[in-house]
Amino acid sequence: MNPDKYKHIDDGELLKQFYADKNNEWLGILLQRYTLLLLGVCMKYLKNEEEAKDGVQQVFLKAITELHKYKVDYFKSWLYMVAKNHCLMKLRNKAQQSLEINEKLLATPDEAEDKNKFVARDIALTQMETALQQLNAEQQQCITLFYLHKKSYHEITAQTGYSLLQVKSNIQNGKRNLKIMLERLQQHEQ
Image (cartoon, rainbow, N blue to C red; front, side, top):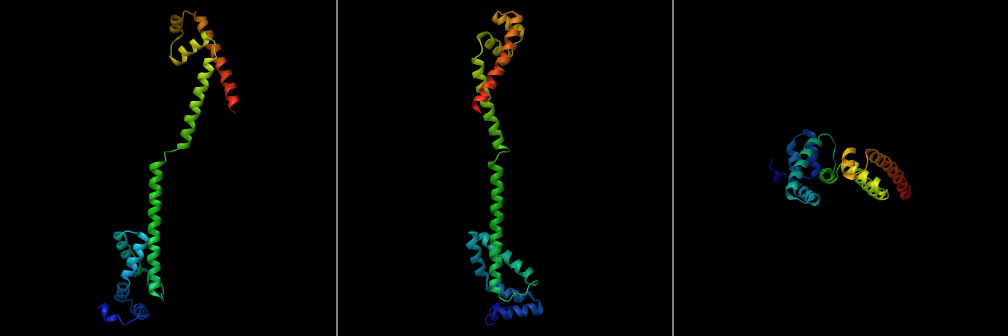
């Protein structure tokens, strides 16, 4: 069928013919009439020529498959809405994919939780340092050598000149005093 041959026939008549004999050639004539309208609608929303052309093809396919199911009275309006809805869905899907990609790229798992752990650990270390400095010199030295430098009791006695009993006592008393001081520091911060 030559589309120019049917220029004088309005959309309503072409639709009647289509519904009467289900011949897609009638629909082809209608679609050809509105190809530029569809391209304009798709360009308006998608802002990309290739995507707009693809959109027109998708709308054509939808019109061919859907028009059999519905009784459409105003083809141009119906086609416009199909094109608009197609473009909006495409934009929504693109935005959702972009959002998902950005979330995956930008957000690290449990980012806030990790930050809170680092802050809590930093505070605890600062409090530990403050409390350690408040111990007497012997306890401070024995605690530092035992816990921070990983020295054994015998290595500490050799390095400090304290007896084994003094080293054990300084570590035990220093540990207890540290605990008391840390509890006080934590109470002051609350």
